[in-house]
Length: 510
Ligand SMILES: Cc1cc2nc3c(=O)[nH]c(=O)nc-3n(C[C@H](O)[C@H](O)[C@H](O)COP(=O)(O)OP(=O)(O)OC[C@H]3O[C@@H](n4cnc5c(N)ncnc54)[C@H](O)[C@@H]3O)c2cc1C
Image 1 (cartoon, rainbow, N blue to C red):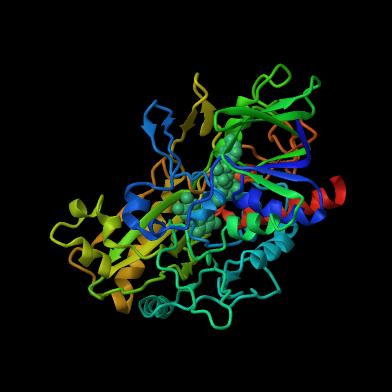
Image 2: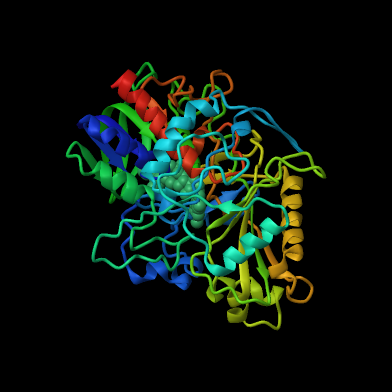
């Protein structure tokens, strides 16, 4: 059996970032990834292939609590979900780390503060080439250092929207985006045609394959094995140490051992892995004496909203504007509402499924040429009954009931109001036509919370260094550790935390 100093399971935001952080230590590192590399092929930017035929999504179905099957929007590949993410990389707000009163209840405090994560947010922003403008977002937490890259410029139609919002007294800001401007002399610039939801064959998008894994593998002591599905973690007879990692690769069963095992398979799959690894000492699942593993699943209340303007919107890269004026509420509604950002620019093919019934009389091409495309995120609360379990065959069951919706509905109304009152949009199509879509259970993009961290082993599975309370050599660094989800996209917090845990491992453990 091959032995390593460290095994990292998963190459997404958590695993890919940690691999890069630990590789320069010279320790022997094995990175196990169930998926393969996404090939750089013309289909990367083909909407039909990517959106309608789900070319890069995992080929598996899960069931919901009613036993209904659905196809999750999850990606098993080197880079994990960051391979297709929109790379909007925002810090959680300072108040998100404390108890926050929402319309439906309390979003619980984390047992670390913003200041514990702040230096690692900065490190992650540099590592992931975040382009942004410090101080432009009124809710952003304190940071004296500027972003190392200037914000991506708005294209004219988005600049117009930005100016219109300003004229209303709002505070739109350049959305921080992880985008690598690495043109070399004599090379033409790479302009991303498709971005949010698509893999990027130019590798300009700062994902955890390009930024994390590729850099880790420069070091000879780091090794990646793809198509390697981790089936189980096996403990010694005391139950306190992981003795070996069981892997299925091309139908073959393999075992590896390591001093430290870091799970980073994504919040749903990491919980499933611990539940699958139940044994005599851990009858409810590995490290699950608290019974929290799999519970408190969160994925945000997310909606896409397409507003149709009479003005054409020829924007190519639309994801440059954010708005947080309603993040913590306003005078009318003193509870958090959430965050608004632009989506990637929609095209006609994306509308094929939904638009004809919603907007009869308009061609898809007309809709796409005139749409302003928004994404809204509000916090959902960590309810214990929203959870990941396994059915008798070991397949994933995701039980989720929507909650805390009032703030999200308020946010949707605010955006409509803004669009109806901005100069550039006073000529909205008849009946102020919006195509709105609340993201359903299959939209697992922002999954988190299923292996929460904290000081109390009765209510958390991990300590605040993301080490399992009950298993000495087990760490978890994907989105599972979140005790609450805030209302910003999760990836930067996952990356920053992986760097924080990496520093701890380097200075205290290795
Ligand atoms: C379309 C889309 C757009 C998004 N846009 C944004 C955005 O703009 N900003 C943002 O912050 N976030 C965004 N996200 C979310 C972001 O991608 C995730 O928050 C982030 O990738 C989660 O990181 P992770 O490490 O928790 O897991 P993942 O990135 O999901 O990585 C988990 C990895 O583990 C592997 N794995 C799973 N099970 C096993 C196993 N048993 N054995 C071996 N390997 C395993 C998977 O293949 C995968 O590579 C988006 C997501 C999607 C899908």
